[in-house]
Image (cartoon, rainbow, N blue to C red; front, side, top):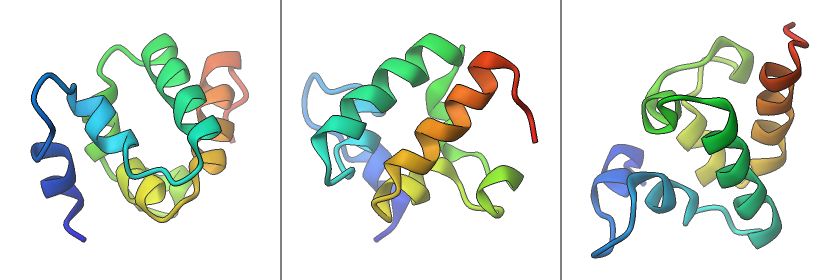
Length: 85
C-alpha cells in the first residue's frame, strides 16, 4: 500500500492525521496515538511522513500501517517525557 496515498485519500471532513491513523487495526492504540500525536508534536502529519531513525528508518505512517501502533506510542512517550535513546 502506498502510505502517501493513504494520507492523501482521506474521507470528506477527515483530517490527514485521522486518515493516517485509520490504518491502525487496533482501535485502542489508534485513539491513544491521535491524542499523543496532537499533544506532543506541533506538526504531526509532517512527523508521520518523515523517516525516523528510532523506527529503523521507517516513516511513522508505515509503522502504523504495519500494525505497530504500540511502538509509536512508546516513541511518542519518550519524546514527551524527555527519554531520548
